[in-house]
Every structure is written in C-alpha cells, then in structure tokens.
Length: 182
Image 1 (cartoon, rainbow, N blue to C red):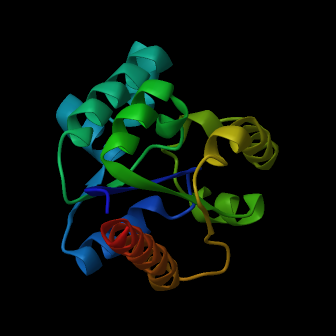
Image 2: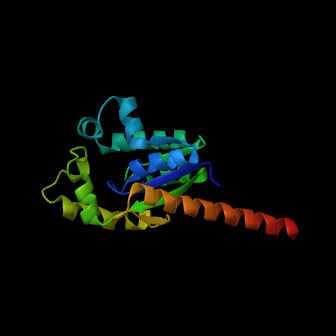
Image 3: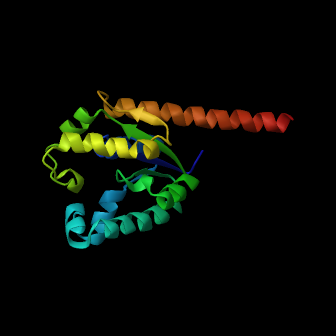
C-alpha cells in the first residue's frame, strides 16, 4: 500500500471531513493543505489571493506538496486545484494513493454557501461557476478513482474508501504470492 492517502476533488465535496475520519480509522495523521498553508503564512486564503495573487498561492501549494510527499502515514486533504498541477500530482502520487471526491453541483453549493472563504466563487452566479469549474477540471479529476459523496455521510464515504484500500492491498498481496510461485 502507498504510504499516504490523498483526497482530491472540488471544494465542498468533503475532503477535510472525510480525511479526518479516515485518518482516525487508519491511525494516520491528518493534513489539510489549505489549513497548513494558512497556519504557516498567517493569513487566510482569500487574503493571500488578494494580497499576493493566485500564482503565489499555487507556489505555496507546490512547496507543501513536495514536503508532504516525503512523509508517510498521512491522510492529505488537498485544495481543490492542487492535484491538477502536474508537479504536485507527481510528487503526491509517488508516495500516496489518490481518491477524488465528487458531488453534484447543487450539493456543493449548499455545502459551501455559508462559507465566505471561497475566492473562486465570489461571482454573481456561483452555481454556474461551480459547473464551469467542474467541467474544466473533469479530465484532471478523472485520473483518480471517483467517490461520489452526494447524499452520503462522511462515515459512509470513509467506509467506501477503506474498502477500496483493502481491495488494493489484497490485489497486491495476491500478485506478490503469484510471482513467488512462478
């Protein structure tokens, strides 16, 4: 099994909530890349965007990705665009199994509507912006196993991911045994 579990996907799909529960279940440490960046920088993400720009923030994401990729026994909840950057994806994939959490646009909007911390959605029609961003990111997100969180509790999503992790371990064990017999 990969040393880390990485959760990617659009904002509001449950990466942080599911990640915390999954980390508890696996006995891993939990890291939310956005929270780590804010803690280290001392500013909120909207403030970083406003004062430094998106390119600066994306550089912080890459630094964090490279750092986390060198660690083990982590469940990492990434920012919604972090794994779309090839450098970040390559780094975290080397030592991590990646799952993409998905949800219907209406559910995403309902989950994040009260949160004023989403600079990419500070637009007149956030529902249309969500659909647009999901379409733009479909290929990048599609590279990873998809877990639909729509209408599910965090515990149900954790159970689904845990099952996929077990299947992955079992498949590796069977392949290894088959190789030894040959």
